[in-house]
Image (cartoon, rainbow, N blue to C red):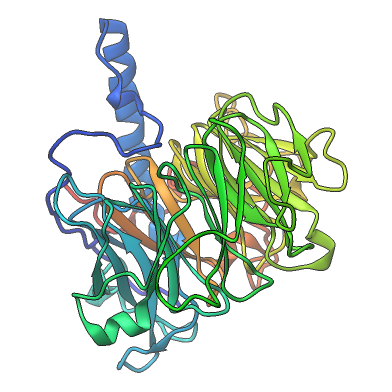
Length: 467
């Protein structure tokens, strides 16, 4: 895909949340801080000015950084986003229809689980930027289902049966929707299953990559529940596995790619805790105490590659992401430093060395573990060099990012949602991550961002910034 002329950024407006309440479990920004002194006011203003300038730089650089980049203003913020596998014909030559899972976080209205259709060009289709296609919103809500129990904290599809979607509401229960069946029943469709076992709400929700229909959830009351969805007939079910870490909230849980019976959980007690699903009760298999200096928000195992199955990532409110070798957990292999609390982390499904983070420092940001220890020269005498592992920083969001997803269908196709009601779909250019074809110049070895090195992109190729 290529661009032929300057384009105008397509951005529409819609109401944001009106009650002023912060999005749950997400870190505060400087703009949220109380104005206790003129000094703090000045710090907040400087941070805002810096953020606004970085965004303007990103808008200028966007056509050189992305094959496709679009933005949609949602009526309500979404705490969750995930690509569904596969795509269909979009009814336009050279374009395909992809699908995203989203949810709503309203201020009192009924919440919904959303399936959003996104039309995107295939890799052979050129974008005519003179027609405004670069930056154009090509998405639409394809399915909206009532979500009882409050906002959608998390929504994840079953890898073996993608029409089954597990959600975590702001209540003690969890739900499983059959979105294929619901699409036939219409907007009055209710959850297919209600999962009862936790004593509080939560965010963590993971399907087994090994066994069809095996699901594990965790909650703020420290409980972990396993569910056999494959044998369920509908209605309400109770867990087939139950464990508790005490009263400390468990924020995330993930299945080991090596053993179908091993899960890792983490949360407010700052520990990595490994559990054997064959053993009921509160006794874990092993634990790494004080793995971080603050709450652990997210975990990630790789999705492919036998040589990489021992890699585990943990993301924390201490502004670090740590890489662990599960064969030797005495200390992390490496610690990556972020600019804000990190709320989500995930390995890239198409490159075994790349992972992505998001959180208070906006993003998403792409990191490459193969670059640990590499040297990086600063852009100027005044600038501190970016971490050598940081290969790309998406600069399109102005607010903290709640969640992101990398497409299993296409390399470097990302979707992200932020606290200011924004959904962005960005197809990062492959040139960012490797050699530029034809001249052998490697631009994947340094930081590329709308507010960093790429800010020097020619202004003539830029879309206009929104007011």
